[in-house]
Image (cartoon, rainbow, N blue to C red; front, side, top):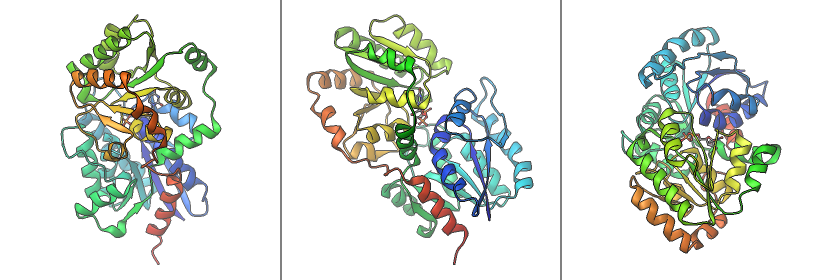
Length: 372
Ligand code: UDP
């Protein structure tokens, strides 16, 4: 029996670890799993944990308003120590690039406990963008014993940085599992369906919440989208607004009370997927959406200067806007007059996996922890 401590703190971590937990929990003779939440996001994490049926065994409850990543990291370092002493895991599993994942990896290293990293090998190449995520994931790669990479490109990146190939497993990204599971088992809410049924225009779905977008870039992008909707009676916009005040306030100011602009509260997973399914075009700075859009065959404009998921662009599903709202305006007007790219995207195979990443990660953990 191997003991696995699984740590998560934000919405994307729970979405992507839920399929891994399901696979580990389906092997009770092999794995004893402890689920630890940092609650770096409180309002966004807990409903998602409930939705995916993830029981939280221990909660570090680190969230306070307006705290810095350093404060989050120090609370996790301090809070995880006694849990590691008590549970004595054979492996700590972290996901992605959050401060929770980075601090969890560091706490485990200091405790001499091996770390497994889900979604390993993503790089933008710019330590300041996304900040602090790019440096978080680079640090985790230095600490981790085992690396679960979503794509061949991620495997190559890790090897080029000196990671031993025998410690890397190519697994696909479990977000594809989560999305497929949700499509098969969940129903979107009647309230959202009713609201979306009133929209008969081309629907642009927006998400934006990254630190790099805050301020002038975000305001500029929101103004461009407002003008685009106002200029075209057959276009509507739906935006589930992130609760961060740096997003909420400019959104209310620029997009509040505009015809055909639907500002929504953050959506549960089945509702968000339903919204994406109805999109004509997705515009987003999110990481997870870059993997979900290809899974659903939706064209995506990425509101970032660079992306650590070049597969989305190389496969032809996504295009990079860069940091300039003027470029977004140009791209939107070109797509309005010629949307052949948007219509072709649904035929492109998903570069992020087939929906079996959870099982593949559980298989790889079994192999790594039980060498012959
Ligand atoms: N998401 C959601 N409801 C929303 C907006 C996003 O369920 O209203 C999901 C989305 O499907 C994606 C994840 O949240 O998988 C992305 O989280 P976020 O954008 O916070 O983080 P990132 O992926 O950029 O790290």
